[in-house]
Amino acid sequence: WFEGLPHLLEGLSAVVKKRQVLPELLTAQRFPGQEAAHLLPSILKIGVTLKEEEFREKVAPLVVKLFASPDRAVRFRLLTSLGDMIEFLDDAMLNDKIFPECVNGFTDSNAPIREATVKSMIFFVSRLKPKIVEGRVLKLLIK
Image (cartoon, rainbow, N blue to C red):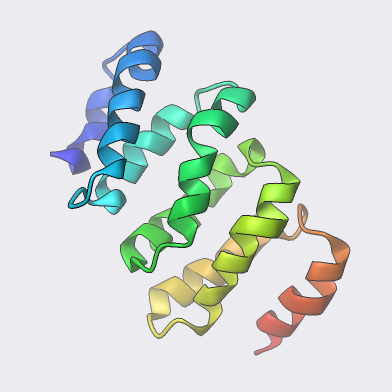
């Protein structure tokens, strides 16, 4: 059901998505057994329509939490969705919380995760501190 939800969201008004659907999805995300990978596309689809401060308040904490998740499906969805949401994430959050978790994808045994991690660097590099780019990113890309 959740996999078809992003398509169904197109028929709802922005107010309904923001005030009714998003809070319910964020609440459902907290309960064990809910597949984060299935909920995430709908959350992000609504999230990118929010104002920047609303995204940072409601969706960004979840993004940070999910980047630390060992669930490969979740990490893959986050990595492939990074281009849509990167503008809503502040530099400190990217440098201190998200990027350190993201680099684990370079050594993942799953090839699609490694590929998505490399592709996500396009979005990270311009926002990372120069010290991190020179010290970590270049070394990881050379491997």
